[in-house]
Structure formats: structure tokens, C-alpha cells
Image 1: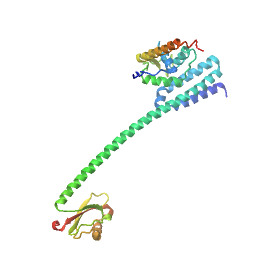
Image 2: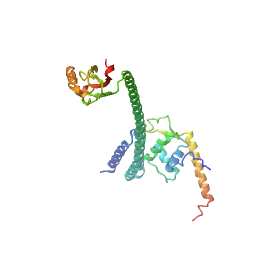
Image 3: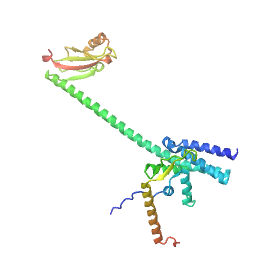
Image 4: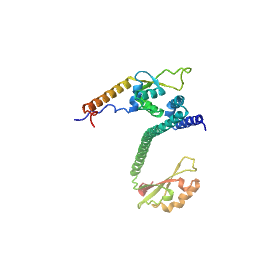
Length: 116
Length: 205
């Protein structure tokens, strides 16, 4: 029986946390980096190279979009751009969370925590 | 060198690294990456001192390099695809030109074939097209050789034609006469194209 091809490959940790950082509100690059570090309890720290490499691909595939609003030059750095999660990005993130959840359930069923 | 100067130097070198990104990527994200770097380093310095800022700056340099290479490779692959597309388009264009040339050639061949058909009406057995320098054609016995000669009086002039009929079947023995005509019209031997046709003597007039 032919196996059904998975729609999207598993996200990398960086991509997952970047999408997760944009769930509740739009953020600029530095704020995304801070949020990724906080959400991963400082286990994942991404730099600008990784962040913008991911954002480039996410923008191209429609997972995130750049916010139309520009920061107030008196209050914020004009070079900053704000990014938000698109509905497609939300669906993908939800699918990834479900995939991870199933993986955790499978690990629980095998009592991985108890195994030596 | 003070730590601040080192930080300024790192900021500058980071800017140089950003310039190594592909143009499109740099124009889109370059200033943002630079801004994030500056914020990150100054925050680290503010919270934990100049040494922490220096280390953060160095770490971000190291972090940028593999991503920089990745983007360059992506760009090269994309460029290679573009080149491949260009090559495919060029090949298609060349193919079309070649096909058009072959078609034209076939058309010209048909034209020659029509001429040969006309020639056949007169019972001509052989037709040679050659340059004067290679003119070694020979007609069968009882045939008269006719030479249709296209010449150019100068390199810029349009070809003109002169038909010369010879009584003999062998072209090579008339070479001096052809030379004389070439001289008269001021054309060089290599600028003239000669078509030799053999006409049976019975049809020659």
C-alpha cells in the first residue's frame, strides 16, 4: 500500500521557535531572537544569520508576512521591520505541534522515561 | 586598543561580512541584520560589561559565516538554474535558427533542383558548382561546357553574372580565358563563383 506523502517536512528547531514567537503578536528581528531564547528556556539561541535566513524562506513560502506598519522614527529604529504569522503559518505550526505531540505520546507509550 | 575600539572594529567587520551576502538578500535584510547585531552587542555590553559585548560580537560573527555561505550557495544554485534556463533558451534559439537555416537551405536546394529540372530539359548531364580555383570539371564527350560566372567587381558590390560558353568539354583548358575575364572586370579569382554546366552539343544553340 503506498504511503501518503507528508505535506511538509518537520520544522527545524529554529523555524519552530521563530513561528512560535510570532503567535501572539508581531515582532521585529531582535524581539524574535529574545522570544526564541525565552521560549526555549535559553536552550536555543539564534543569531541574525539564522534568523534572517529562516525569515527569508518563511516570507517566500507565505508562513510569515512583513507588517505594513513602520516604526515611529522617534520611538524606534527605522531599520526595524516587524513580522507577523500568516494563517498558513499558523496551520503549519499547529500541524507541527500535533506531530510533536504524537511523537511525545509514542515515547510515553514506550515508557522512554522509565527505560535505562 | 580599548574594548570600545574593539567593539567598533567588530561592528565594522560585521558590516563587511554582511556585504558578502548576495545583493538581493543584502538589500532586503542587510540593514536589519546590522541593526540586530548592534542592539545585541550593546545590550550584552550594557548588562554584563564590555567583555560580554566583545564575546557576543565575536559569537555573532561566527554565527553569520555559515549562514552567509548557505545564502551564497543558494544564490549560486539559483544562478545556475537561471544560467540553465538561459542556456535552454539560447539552445532553443540556436535550434530555431539552425532549423530556419536548414529550411532555407532546403528551399535553396529545391531552387537548384528546379534549375536542374530546367537544365534537364536541355539534356544536361552534369552540373558543377565550384569556385574558379577548384574548377576541374569535365563534361562528357559531345558536350559543350557553359560557365555561369558570378563575380564581384569589388567587395561591396552586388554579384553580377556573365555566362560564358565554351566549345570544349574540359573546363581546365579555358582557365586563361576565365582569368582574362576576371582581369577585365577587376574581380579576383576568389571573389568569383562559377557554375559549370554541360550541355549536349545538339542542344547548345
